[in-house]
Amino acid sequence: MNEFPRKLFDYEKEWLFTALPKNKLGYKLYRDKIESLFVIGNGRFGGKNFVLGPANSKVDLDVPTSAVFAVSYVFFDSCEVYVVIHEEQYEQIEIDFRLNKGDDFPIGMRPKKYWSYSDWNPGQKAPFDNSYVREVHLIKNKLILAIAPAHKRIWIYEFSSKVNYFVPVTNLFNEIRILKGIKDPQLALNPNSFFTNLDLFSDSEIGQGFLLYNKYLKRIDIDYNIFLK
Image 1 (cartoon, rainbow, N blue to C red):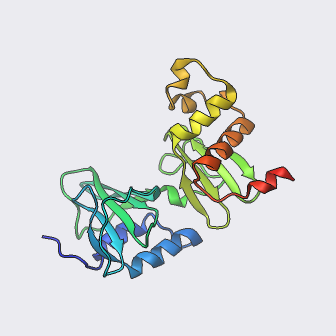
Image 2 (cartoon, rainbow, N blue to C red):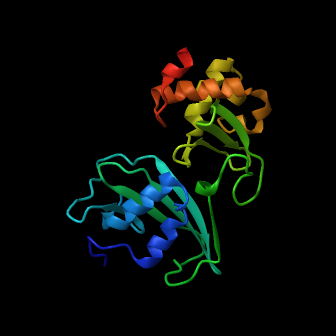
């Protein structure tokens, strides 16, 4: 039976840190926060879905889950663990360890390897499989939108923090299809068609679509005044 609050076990911290490279400022800040927090209880999914926070705080399951901040895949001889770290809210961070492959969590075992989207930098191929990544430069030396068709993933790289923020595909695609005037239901009602038909969309259309999406469903801080100059 779990007893809370408690400090993270060494193996839990090791798994979490595979998604938080210490050589990138934004991720290092999360490493430092996690070092100071306690596991204060289970999240809404139980199991190895936990909430981290100050020792005297309580889990509030009425608070909606925040956006995903970082993920990693940690490989062992007999299994694979999927690690999810959510964005901090109200001084708490939700984390999740899931078995992506195998029957039992490899407690006490050393990982063979891991990969994470957090390690991606502009100019690189996609993590794990070295597949194609399209880069759309939104603001020079500030923001790059990265699209990995084989992964069906989109993220935005922030130069100042070196963090890759995940972008919801459906919300972004809705703005792009409206902007482009797409009415064909086979495309309009299928967000994944964005990846299979990526060549149909110009950098300008994708960039404008993201800026519209971000203006109303804020994902990252942007000073929109720079576009009025």
